[in-house]
Length: 380
Image (cartoon, rainbow, N blue to C red):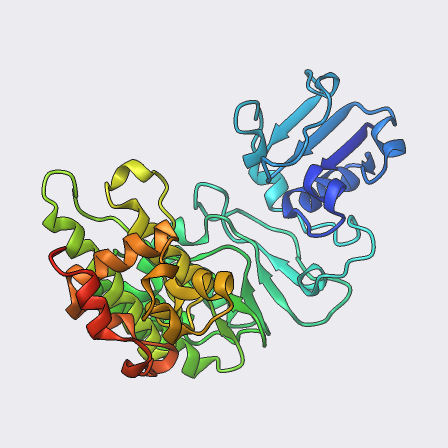
């Protein structure tokens, strides 16, 4: 019998959530007759061990002391990007999770049946153990990290298995290229019974243009009709798709593309968001694109003209109409730069900048257009 310690660093500091790798590692060793120590306190840290498994997803949390990183340690996770030395093998992935590993489970998914079909390379696992949870609350959580990485036949095989399950939810983001563009996969996916109040998470690997957005909205509409008690999560699109340094006109094309995608989402009632810039050097016009991203990430219900005016309204404790008729308030650099940019293509404001959630619009008279045109005369 070996002494095994399991250290989920994220859980140790936050006392919430769970890591399915840890649950399967615990199950594997307990079935072998090993003694498992799950670290939740300083006392647990100092207990003797033959093997210690250390996982950390967040790179913002403190790492364990260096003395724990030796030949007995197996380290992995996004929070250990430079010192990771281990990947969970298929023989462990095939184990039934140890549902009792985490103390006092409070998250509804911690009491679910956890199902896994694939290894991290997207290959079907061989013979797997019964995944049934003793709590028997009839929720089914698909925990595969590489579910959508697999080939069409394997995905359809897995979806067919899920047809036998109640209240299905996917832990990892769903690849839109598979469920939107593949007719067979889409049909099988739409036959599943999803758990109430679950929020779908999506990975947009289709594209960032308006046509892709239309395809995605069509799928989301079908999904919402099939599972009306669920929450259809946001879908992200890239802010920059063209080289804006070689041709400044590309910046306008990217801006209108972003605004048209957001308008489609607002009109149809689905959250289509613009991703934050990963690197400001992608565009010389980063202020406008950062503002557009922040708008879609934080205030999707507002029109763009309302969103950019918010800091001014708060600063001067005034209304929207006051902001757009008094340039003495325009000291906010971001507000002024975004507004001056939009006024160079005023048609974009009327087409996209007044649109609120679900195709409602900001009243035109809320803005003194003659005053704006006079202030930005000659800045075309």
